[in-house]
Length: 249
Length: 282
Image 1 (tube, rainbow over the protein chains, first blue to last red):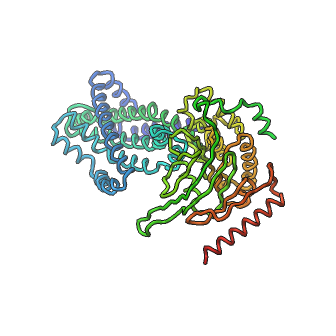
Image 2: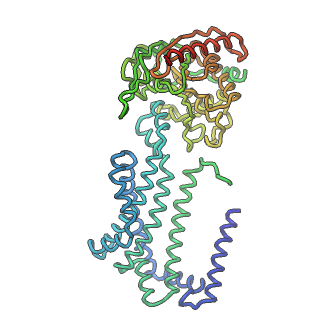
Image 3: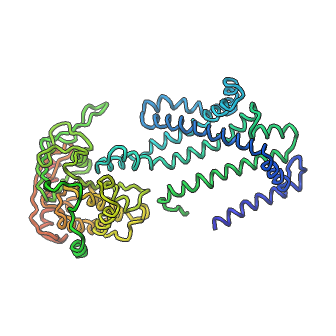
Protein backbone atom coordinates (compact mmCIF):
# COMPACT_ATOMS: atom_id res chain seq x y z
CA UNK A 1 0.00 0.00 0.00
CA UNK A 2 2.77 2.39 0.94
CA UNK A 3 4.72 1.58 -2.22
CA UNK A 4 1.75 2.32 -4.45
CA UNK A 5 1.30 5.60 -2.61
CA UNK A 6 4.94 6.42 -3.26
CA UNK A 7 4.53 5.58 -6.95
CA UNK A 8 1.46 7.82 -7.12
CA UNK A 9 3.31 10.69 -5.48
CA UNK A 10 6.16 10.47 -8.00
CA UNK A 11 3.66 10.17 -10.85
CA UNK A 12 1.79 13.29 -9.72
CA UNK A 13 5.05 15.22 -9.50
CA UNK A 14 6.02 14.12 -13.03
CA UNK A 15 2.58 14.99 -14.39
CA UNK A 16 2.74 18.46 -12.82
CA UNK A 17 6.17 18.93 -14.36
CA UNK A 18 4.94 17.89 -17.82
CA UNK A 19 1.88 20.13 -17.46
CA UNK A 20 3.92 23.17 -16.44
CA UNK A 21 6.48 22.55 -19.18
CA UNK A 22 3.66 22.63 -21.74
CA UNK A 23 2.47 25.99 -20.44
CA UNK A 24 5.86 27.69 -20.12
CA UNK A 25 8.69 27.98 -22.59
CA UNK A 26 11.84 25.81 -22.44
CA UNK A 27 13.83 28.74 -21.04
CA UNK A 28 11.59 28.76 -17.97
CA UNK A 29 10.48 25.16 -17.40
CA UNK A 30 11.95 22.55 -19.73
CA UNK A 31 10.03 19.24 -19.98
CA UNK A 32 11.25 15.93 -18.57
CA UNK A 33 12.32 14.48 -21.93
CA UNK A 34 14.93 17.11 -22.88
CA UNK A 35 16.15 17.18 -19.27
CA UNK A 36 16.66 13.41 -19.09
CA UNK A 37 18.35 13.50 -22.49
CA UNK A 38 20.73 16.11 -21.14
CA UNK A 39 21.41 14.00 -18.04
CA UNK A 40 22.29 10.96 -20.15
CA UNK A 41 24.48 13.06 -22.40
CA UNK A 42 26.31 14.55 -19.42
CA UNK A 43 26.93 11.16 -17.88
CA UNK A 44 28.07 9.58 -21.13
CA UNK A 45 30.72 12.21 -21.62
CA UNK A 46 33.58 11.59 -19.21
CA UNK A 47 33.56 15.22 -18.22
CA UNK A 48 30.09 15.05 -16.67
CA UNK A 49 31.10 12.08 -14.53
CA UNK A 50 34.26 13.91 -13.52
CA UNK A 51 32.29 16.87 -12.16
CA UNK A 52 29.91 14.58 -10.33
CA UNK A 53 32.82 12.67 -8.84
CA UNK A 54 34.47 15.91 -7.71
CA UNK A 55 31.39 17.07 -5.83
CA UNK A 56 30.63 13.69 -4.27
CA UNK A 57 34.19 13.30 -3.03
CA UNK A 58 34.16 16.80 -1.52
CA UNK A 59 30.86 16.10 0.17
CA UNK A 60 32.07 12.77 1.57
CA UNK A 61 35.33 14.21 2.91
CA UNK A 62 33.56 17.23 4.38
CA UNK A 63 30.97 14.95 5.93
CA UNK A 64 33.67 12.86 7.57
CA UNK A 65 35.26 15.98 9.05
CA UNK A 66 31.86 17.21 10.27
CA UNK A 67 31.03 13.84 11.86
CA UNK A 68 34.40 13.59 13.61
CA UNK A 69 34.39 17.16 14.92
CA UNK A 70 30.68 17.09 15.73
CA UNK A 71 30.80 13.74 17.53
CA UNK A 72 33.77 14.90 19.60
CA UNK A 73 32.12 18.15 20.61
CA UNK A 74 28.73 16.48 21.13
CA UNK A 75 30.37 13.91 23.39
CA UNK A 76 32.07 16.59 25.47
CA UNK A 77 28.82 18.55 25.77
CA UNK A 78 26.77 15.49 26.62
CA UNK A 79 29.16 14.11 29.21
CA UNK A 80 30.18 17.25 31.08
CA UNK A 81 27.96 20.06 32.32
CA UNK A 82 30.93 22.42 32.15
CA UNK A 83 31.48 21.45 28.54
CA UNK A 84 27.82 21.98 27.81
CA UNK A 85 27.75 25.47 29.31
CA UNK A 86 31.02 26.40 27.61
CA UNK A 87 30.30 25.21 24.08
CA UNK A 88 26.54 25.74 23.89
CA UNK A 89 26.80 29.34 22.64
CA UNK A 90 29.56 28.40 20.18
CA UNK A 91 27.36 25.79 18.57
CA UNK A 92 24.42 28.18 18.42
CA UNK A 93 26.56 30.88 16.77
CA UNK A 94 27.93 28.26 14.40
CA UNK A 95 24.42 27.31 13.40
CA UNK A 96 23.27 30.87 12.74
CA UNK A 97 26.15 31.92 10.49
CA UNK A 98 25.01 31.53 6.86
CA UNK A 99 26.78 28.73 5.00
CA UNK A 100 27.92 31.09 2.27
CA UNK A 101 29.98 33.04 4.82
CA UNK A 102 31.97 29.90 5.69
CA UNK A 103 32.43 29.32 1.97
CA UNK A 104 33.78 32.81 1.33
CA UNK A 105 36.06 32.76 4.39
CA UNK A 106 37.54 29.37 3.56
CA UNK A 107 38.14 30.32 -0.07
CA UNK A 108 39.87 33.55 0.99
CA UNK A 109 41.98 31.78 3.60
CA UNK A 110 42.98 28.63 1.78
CA UNK A 111 42.67 29.64 -1.87
CA UNK A 112 40.52 28.24 -4.65
CA UNK A 113 41.25 24.57 -4.03
CA UNK A 114 39.72 21.31 -2.84
CA UNK A 115 41.13 21.75 0.65
CA UNK A 116 39.19 24.98 1.13
CA UNK A 117 36.03 23.33 -0.17
CA UNK A 118 36.31 20.34 2.16
CA UNK A 119 37.06 22.51 5.18
CA UNK A 120 34.12 24.79 4.39
CA UNK A 121 31.78 21.79 4.17
CA UNK A 122 33.11 20.27 7.38
CA UNK A 123 32.78 23.50 9.36
CA UNK A 124 29.31 24.27 8.06
CA UNK A 125 27.88 20.84 8.82
CA UNK A 126 29.51 20.13 12.12
CA UNK A 127 27.34 22.22 14.51
CA UNK A 128 24.28 20.23 13.41
CA UNK A 129 26.14 16.97 14.06
CA UNK A 130 27.28 18.26 17.45
CA UNK A 131 23.70 19.10 18.48
CA UNK A 132 22.40 15.66 17.54
CA UNK A 133 25.23 13.83 19.26
CA UNK A 134 24.89 16.05 22.33
CA UNK A 135 21.22 15.07 22.64
CA UNK A 136 22.09 11.44 21.95
CA UNK A 137 24.63 11.29 24.75
CA UNK A 138 22.27 13.08 27.15
CA UNK A 139 19.51 10.59 26.38
CA UNK A 140 21.61 7.53 27.26
CA UNK A 141 19.67 5.55 29.85
CA UNK A 142 21.95 5.36 32.87
CA UNK A 143 19.65 2.80 34.49
CA UNK A 144 20.61 0.37 31.75
CA UNK A 145 24.27 1.12 32.40
CA UNK A 146 23.70 0.43 36.11
CA UNK A 147 22.05 -2.86 35.11
CA UNK A 148 25.14 -3.80 33.13
CA UNK A 149 27.35 -2.91 36.08
CA UNK A 150 25.21 -4.95 38.45
CA UNK A 151 25.78 -7.94 36.18
CA UNK A 152 29.50 -7.16 36.26
CA UNK A 153 29.94 -6.41 32.57
CA UNK A 154 33.44 -5.09 31.81
CA UNK A 155 33.59 -1.42 30.79
CA UNK A 156 34.21 -2.11 27.11
CA UNK A 157 31.07 -4.28 27.04
CA UNK A 158 29.09 -1.56 28.81
CA UNK A 159 30.11 0.85 26.04
CA UNK A 160 29.78 -1.54 23.12
CA UNK A 161 26.60 -3.38 24.12
CA UNK A 162 24.69 -0.83 26.19
CA UNK A 163 25.86 2.72 25.43
CA UNK A 164 26.63 2.73 21.70
CA UNK A 165 23.44 1.01 20.53
CA UNK A 166 21.44 3.73 22.27
CA UNK A 167 23.15 6.43 20.19
CA UNK A 168 22.44 4.79 16.81
CA UNK A 169 19.24 6.77 16.06
CA UNK A 170 21.06 10.02 16.83
CA UNK A 171 24.06 9.13 14.70
CA UNK A 172 21.70 8.36 11.81
CA UNK A 173 19.82 11.63 12.27
CA UNK A 174 23.11 13.52 12.42
CA UNK A 175 24.38 11.82 9.24
CA UNK A 176 21.21 12.68 7.33
CA UNK A 177 21.18 16.24 8.47
CA UNK A 178 24.87 16.73 7.76
CA UNK A 179 24.53 15.14 4.32
CA UNK A 180 21.76 17.57 3.39
CA UNK A 181 23.80 20.55 4.52
CA UNK A 182 27.04 19.26 2.99
CA UNK A 183 25.82 19.01 -0.54
CA UNK A 184 24.24 22.45 -0.43
CA UNK A 185 27.40 24.10 0.82
CA UNK A 186 29.47 22.05 -1.65
CA UNK A 187 27.58 23.44 -4.62
CA UNK A 188 27.82 26.95 -3.16
CA UNK A 189 31.60 26.71 -2.74
CA UNK A 190 31.95 25.33 -6.26
CA UNK A 191 29.75 28.06 -7.65
CA UNK A 192 31.82 30.81 -6.04
CA UNK A 193 35.34 29.58 -6.36
CA UNK A 194 35.88 26.22 -8.03
CA UNK A 195 36.42 25.20 -11.62
CA UNK A 196 34.97 21.73 -11.22
CA UNK A 197 32.00 20.02 -9.64
CA UNK A 198 28.24 20.25 -9.92
CA UNK A 199 28.17 23.80 -8.53
CA UNK A 200 30.63 24.87 -11.21
CA UNK A 201 28.51 23.24 -13.91
CA UNK A 202 25.42 25.00 -12.59
CA UNK A 203 27.30 28.28 -12.75
CA UNK A 204 28.52 27.54 -16.25
CA UNK A 205 25.06 26.72 -17.61
CA UNK A 206 23.60 29.66 -15.73
CA UNK A 207 25.99 31.83 -17.78
CA UNK A 208 24.64 30.26 -20.96
CA UNK A 209 21.01 30.63 -19.80
CA UNK A 210 20.40 26.90 -20.31
CA UNK A 211 17.53 26.01 -17.99
CA UNK A 212 17.54 22.45 -19.36
CA UNK A 213 21.11 21.86 -18.12
CA UNK A 214 20.42 23.52 -14.76
CA UNK A 215 17.52 21.13 -14.29
CA UNK A 216 19.63 18.21 -15.52
CA UNK A 217 22.45 18.81 -13.03
CA UNK A 218 20.07 19.41 -10.15
CA UNK A 219 18.23 16.18 -10.90
CA UNK A 220 21.49 14.25 -11.25
CA UNK A 221 22.46 15.29 -7.78
CA UNK A 222 19.05 14.52 -6.36
CA UNK A 223 19.45 10.99 -7.73
CA UNK A 224 22.84 10.63 -6.08
CA UNK A 225 21.41 11.73 -2.72
CA UNK A 226 18.40 9.42 -3.06
CA UNK A 227 20.82 6.60 -3.85
CA UNK A 228 22.78 7.33 -0.67
CA UNK A 229 19.57 7.54 1.37
CA UNK A 230 17.83 4.43 0.07
CA UNK A 231 20.77 2.17 -0.67
CA UNK A 232 23.09 3.05 2.21
CA UNK A 233 21.34 4.78 5.12
CA UNK A 234 17.81 3.37 4.95
CA UNK A 235 18.67 -0.37 4.96
CA UNK A 236 21.09 0.17 7.83
CA UNK A 237 18.44 2.07 9.77
CA UNK A 238 15.87 -0.66 9.15
CA UNK A 239 18.26 -3.27 10.48
CA UNK A 240 19.32 -1.18 13.44
CA UNK A 241 15.79 -0.30 14.50
CA UNK A 242 13.98 -3.54 13.69
CA UNK A 243 13.18 -3.91 17.39
CA UNK A 244 10.93 -0.85 17.38
CA UNK A 245 7.25 -1.69 17.05
CA UNK A 246 5.63 -0.06 14.03
CA UNK A 247 3.62 3.01 14.99
CA UNK A 248 0.19 3.02 13.47
CA UNK A 249 -2.30 5.79 14.12
CA UNK B 1 2.95 -27.99 39.22
CA UNK B 2 4.11 -26.85 35.83
CA UNK B 3 7.52 -25.64 36.87
CA UNK B 4 8.55 -28.56 38.99
CA UNK B 5 7.86 -31.08 36.26
CA UNK B 6 9.82 -28.96 33.84
CA UNK B 7 12.74 -28.73 36.18
CA UNK B 8 12.99 -32.45 36.77
CA UNK B 9 13.54 -32.93 33.07
CA UNK B 10 16.04 -30.13 32.77
CA UNK B 11 19.74 -30.92 33.03
CA UNK B 12 21.13 -30.26 36.49
CA UNK B 13 22.56 -26.77 37.00
CA UNK B 14 26.07 -26.25 38.23
CA UNK B 15 27.81 -27.73 35.23
CA UNK B 16 29.33 -24.36 34.62
CA UNK B 17 32.90 -24.31 33.45
CA UNK B 18 33.85 -21.08 35.15
CA UNK B 19 33.27 -22.11 38.76
CA UNK B 20 36.19 -24.04 40.19
CA UNK B 21 35.22 -27.37 41.70
CA UNK B 22 36.37 -26.70 45.26
CA UNK B 23 34.25 -23.60 45.61
CA UNK B 24 30.94 -23.90 47.37
CA UNK B 25 27.90 -21.91 46.39
CA UNK B 26 27.09 -21.04 50.00
CA UNK B 27 26.36 -17.39 50.47
CA UNK B 28 26.22 -15.94 53.95
CA UNK B 29 25.74 -12.20 53.91
CA UNK B 30 26.66 -10.08 56.86
CA UNK B 31 25.70 -6.43 56.91
CA UNK B 32 27.65 -4.58 59.58
CA UNK B 33 26.91 -1.04 60.73
CA UNK B 34 26.23 0.10 57.21
CA UNK B 35 25.94 3.88 56.74
CA UNK B 36 25.28 5.83 53.56
CA UNK B 37 25.26 9.61 53.29
CA UNK B 38 24.45 11.61 50.21
CA UNK B 39 26.09 15.00 50.19
CA UNK B 40 23.80 17.71 48.93
CA UNK B 41 25.03 21.03 47.66
CA UNK B 42 22.73 23.21 49.77
CA UNK B 43 21.45 21.23 52.74
CA UNK B 44 24.53 19.43 53.94
CA UNK B 45 24.65 15.64 54.09
CA UNK B 46 21.52 13.49 53.94
CA UNK B 47 21.78 10.22 55.76
CA UNK B 48 19.94 7.55 53.80
CA UNK B 49 21.11 4.48 55.68
CA UNK B 50 22.05 4.69 59.34
CA UNK B 51 23.77 1.84 61.13
CA UNK B 52 22.08 -1.05 59.34
CA UNK B 53 23.10 -4.41 60.78
CA UNK B 54 21.74 -7.87 60.01
CA UNK B 55 22.75 -11.27 58.66
CA UNK B 56 21.32 -13.32 55.84
CA UNK B 57 21.66 -17.08 56.04
CA UNK B 58 22.39 -19.22 53.02
CA UNK B 59 19.27 -20.25 51.13
CA UNK B 60 17.09 -17.80 53.02
CA UNK B 61 14.34 -15.71 51.48
CA UNK B 62 14.63 -12.45 53.34
CA UNK B 63 12.43 -9.43 52.73
CA UNK B 64 13.36 -5.89 53.58
CA UNK B 65 10.13 -4.02 54.12
CA UNK B 66 10.00 -0.27 54.49
CA UNK B 67 8.14 2.80 53.37
CA UNK B 68 8.68 4.04 49.81
CA UNK B 69 11.61 6.35 49.41
CA UNK B 70 13.65 4.96 52.27
CA UNK B 71 17.12 3.66 51.58
CA UNK B 72 16.13 0.14 50.51
CA UNK B 73 17.17 0.46 46.87
CA UNK B 74 20.35 2.21 47.92
CA UNK B 75 21.11 -0.73 50.17
CA UNK B 76 20.79 -3.17 47.27
CA UNK B 77 22.99 -0.94 45.12
CA UNK B 78 25.67 -1.04 47.79
CA UNK B 79 25.29 -4.80 48.12
CA UNK B 80 25.74 -5.14 44.36
CA UNK B 81 28.83 -2.93 44.46
CA UNK B 82 27.21 -0.16 42.41
CA UNK B 83 27.64 2.34 45.20
CA UNK B 84 30.16 2.69 47.98
CA UNK B 85 29.02 2.79 51.60
CA UNK B 86 29.94 5.81 53.70
CA UNK B 87 30.62 3.54 56.65
CA UNK B 88 30.40 -0.04 57.80
CA UNK B 89 30.66 -2.97 55.44
CA UNK B 90 28.90 -5.85 53.77
CA UNK B 91 30.61 -9.22 53.86
CA UNK B 92 29.66 -12.14 51.67
CA UNK B 93 31.20 -15.34 52.99
CA UNK B 94 33.36 -13.20 55.27
CA UNK B 95 34.82 -11.29 52.34
CA UNK B 96 33.80 -7.84 51.13
CA UNK B 97 32.05 -7.99 47.80
CA UNK B 98 34.02 -6.51 44.94
CA UNK B 99 32.78 -5.67 41.46
CA UNK B 100 34.31 -8.13 39.00
CA UNK B 101 35.91 -9.86 41.96
CA UNK B 102 34.41 -13.13 40.71
CA UNK B 103 33.96 -14.63 44.17
CA UNK B 104 30.23 -14.32 44.48
CA UNK B 105 27.78 -14.22 41.64
CA UNK B 106 24.88 -11.84 42.04
CA UNK B 107 21.66 -11.69 40.09
CA UNK B 108 19.77 -8.42 40.15
CA UNK B 109 16.11 -7.83 39.34
CA UNK B 110 15.26 -4.14 39.24
CA UNK B 111 12.03 -2.26 39.79
CA UNK B 112 11.76 -1.77 36.03
CA UNK B 113 12.68 -4.64 33.70
CA UNK B 114 15.71 -2.69 32.35
CA UNK B 115 15.93 -4.78 29.20
CA UNK B 116 17.90 -3.80 26.13
CA UNK B 117 15.07 -3.11 23.71
CA UNK B 118 17.23 -3.71 20.64
CA UNK B 119 18.09 -7.23 21.69
CA UNK B 120 15.79 -10.23 21.43
CA UNK B 121 14.48 -11.83 24.61
CA UNK B 122 17.08 -14.59 24.34
CA UNK B 123 19.95 -12.19 23.76
CA UNK B 124 18.81 -10.15 26.76
CA UNK B 125 19.00 -13.23 28.93
CA UNK B 126 22.49 -14.16 27.77
CA UNK B 127 23.85 -10.60 28.02
CA UNK B 128 25.56 -11.15 31.40
CA UNK B 129 26.96 -14.50 30.23
CA UNK B 130 28.61 -13.47 26.99
CA UNK B 131 32.01 -13.21 28.61
CA UNK B 132 31.70 -16.34 30.71
CA UNK B 133 33.47 -18.53 28.17
CA UNK B 134 30.39 -20.62 27.47
CA UNK B 135 29.85 -21.81 23.92
CA UNK B 136 26.96 -20.54 21.86
CA UNK B 137 25.20 -23.86 22.31
CA UNK B 138 25.56 -23.77 26.08
CA UNK B 139 24.22 -20.22 26.12
CA UNK B 140 21.24 -21.38 24.06
CA UNK B 141 20.47 -24.25 26.41
CA UNK B 142 20.92 -22.09 29.49
CA UNK B 143 18.71 -19.28 28.20
CA UNK B 144 16.08 -21.76 27.05
CA UNK B 145 16.02 -23.42 30.45
CA UNK B 146 15.46 -20.21 32.36
CA UNK B 147 13.02 -18.77 29.86
CA UNK B 148 11.05 -21.98 30.27
CA UNK B 149 11.24 -21.54 34.03
CA UNK B 150 9.52 -18.16 33.75
CA UNK B 151 7.14 -19.60 31.15
CA UNK B 152 8.40 -17.62 28.19
CA UNK B 153 9.31 -20.50 25.92
CA UNK B 154 8.28 -19.59 22.40
CA UNK B 155 9.10 -15.92 22.93
CA UNK B 156 12.89 -16.23 22.59
CA UNK B 157 13.12 -14.26 19.37
CA UNK B 158 10.65 -11.51 20.34
CA UNK B 159 11.85 -8.02 21.15
CA UNK B 160 11.02 -6.62 24.61
CA UNK B 161 8.70 -3.92 23.29
CA UNK B 162 6.54 -6.60 21.70
CA UNK B 163 5.85 -8.11 25.15
CA UNK B 164 3.51 -7.06 27.94
CA UNK B 165 4.84 -5.54 31.15
CA UNK B 166 4.45 -8.81 33.02
CA UNK B 167 6.36 -10.72 30.38
CA UNK B 168 9.13 -8.14 30.42
CA UNK B 169 9.39 -8.55 34.19
CA UNK B 170 9.73 -12.29 33.68
CA UNK B 171 12.52 -11.79 31.12
CA UNK B 172 14.34 -9.72 33.72
CA UNK B 173 13.94 -12.55 36.25
CA UNK B 174 15.17 -15.13 33.72
CA UNK B 175 18.20 -12.93 33.03
CA UNK B 176 19.03 -12.75 36.73
CA UNK B 177 18.56 -16.50 37.18
CA UNK B 178 20.56 -17.46 34.10
CA UNK B 179 23.66 -16.06 35.78
CA UNK B 180 23.09 -18.91 38.27
CA UNK B 181 23.72 -16.45 41.07
CA UNK B 182 24.61 -17.33 44.63
CA UNK B 183 22.44 -14.44 45.75
CA UNK B 184 19.42 -13.03 43.98
CA UNK B 185 18.73 -9.36 44.71
CA UNK B 186 15.23 -8.15 43.93
CA UNK B 187 14.19 -4.51 44.13
CA UNK B 188 10.38 -4.27 44.13
CA UNK B 189 10.24 -6.34 40.95
CA UNK B 190 6.45 -6.73 40.91
CA UNK B 191 5.27 -3.21 41.76
CA UNK B 192 4.76 -2.35 38.11
CA UNK B 193 2.40 -5.31 37.65
CA UNK B 194 -1.27 -5.44 38.48
CA UNK B 195 -2.25 -7.66 41.41
CA UNK B 196 -3.39 -10.74 39.46
CA UNK B 197 -0.15 -10.89 37.50
CA UNK B 198 1.90 -10.06 40.58
CA UNK B 199 0.35 -12.98 42.45
CA UNK B 200 1.22 -15.38 39.64
CA UNK B 201 4.76 -14.06 39.57
CA UNK B 202 5.13 -14.41 43.34
CA UNK B 203 3.97 -18.02 43.23
CA UNK B 204 6.43 -18.70 40.44
CA UNK B 205 9.22 -17.00 42.32
CA UNK B 206 8.58 -19.23 45.34
CA UNK B 207 8.66 -22.31 43.14
CA UNK B 208 11.87 -21.18 41.47
CA UNK B 209 13.40 -20.42 44.84
CA UNK B 210 12.52 -23.85 46.20
CA UNK B 211 13.93 -25.51 43.10
CA UNK B 212 17.15 -23.54 42.95
CA UNK B 213 17.81 -22.96 46.68
CA UNK B 214 19.10 -19.44 46.03
CA UNK B 215 19.53 -16.89 48.75
CA UNK B 216 17.07 -14.13 47.92
CA UNK B 217 17.15 -10.59 49.27
CA UNK B 218 13.81 -9.05 48.37
CA UNK B 219 13.08 -5.36 48.86
CA UNK B 220 9.48 -4.18 48.93
CA UNK B 221 7.06 -1.68 50.46
CA UNK B 222 4.12 -4.09 50.13
CA UNK B 223 3.32 -5.70 53.49
CA UNK B 224 1.27 -8.65 52.24
CA UNK B 225 3.84 -9.37 49.53
CA UNK B 226 6.65 -9.49 52.07
CA UNK B 227 4.63 -11.70 54.42
CA UNK B 228 3.56 -14.04 51.63
CA UNK B 229 7.06 -14.52 50.23
CA UNK B 230 9.66 -14.55 52.91
CA UNK B 231 11.18 -16.74 55.62
CA UNK B 232 12.21 -13.71 57.52
CA UNK B 233 11.17 -10.14 57.32
CA UNK B 234 13.02 -7.01 58.32
CA UNK B 235 10.92 -3.95 58.91
CA UNK B 236 13.16 -0.95 58.32
CA UNK B 237 12.65 2.71 59.15
CA UNK B 238 12.39 5.63 56.81
CA UNK B 239 15.53 7.68 56.21
CA UNK B 240 17.89 6.86 57.77
CA UNK B 241 17.19 3.18 57.22
CA UNK B 242 17.65 0.99 60.30
CA UNK B 243 16.23 -2.37 61.26
CA UNK B 244 13.15 -1.60 63.36
CA UNK B 245 11.95 -5.14 63.86
CA UNK B 246 12.73 -8.66 62.66
CA UNK B 247 9.99 -11.23 62.10
CA UNK B 248 10.32 -14.92 61.37
CA UNK B 249 7.53 -16.34 59.26
CA UNK B 250 7.13 -20.01 60.05
CA UNK B 251 4.50 -20.88 57.53
CA UNK B 252 5.26 -23.69 55.11
CA UNK B 253 5.35 -23.27 51.35
CA UNK B 254 3.42 -23.16 49.08
CA UNK B 255 1.45 -20.52 50.91
CA UNK B 256 -2.08 -19.42 50.38
CA UNK B 257 -3.12 -15.77 50.28
CA UNK B 258 -6.19 -16.63 52.39
CA UNK B 259 -4.09 -18.25 55.12
CA UNK B 260 -5.19 -16.79 58.48
CA UNK B 261 -1.68 -16.97 59.90
CA UNK B 262 -0.36 -14.79 57.06
CA UNK B 263 -3.28 -12.42 57.56
CA UNK B 264 -2.51 -12.11 61.27
CA UNK B 265 1.14 -11.48 60.47
CA UNK B 266 0.18 -8.77 57.98
CA UNK B 267 -1.92 -7.08 60.65
CA UNK B 268 0.96 -7.33 63.07
CA UNK B 269 3.33 -5.74 60.55
CA UNK B 270 0.81 -2.98 59.93
CA UNK B 271 0.77 -2.28 63.64
CA UNK B 272 4.56 -2.16 63.64
CA UNK B 273 4.36 0.40 60.84
CA UNK B 274 1.95 2.54 62.84
CA UNK B 275 4.22 2.35 65.87
CA UNK B 276 7.17 3.33 63.69
CA UNK B 277 5.27 6.29 62.23
CA UNK B 278 4.30 7.50 65.70
CA UNK B 279 7.86 7.37 66.85
CA UNK B 280 8.93 9.26 63.78
CA UNK B 281 6.29 11.91 64.28
CA UNK B 282 7.21 12.63 67.90
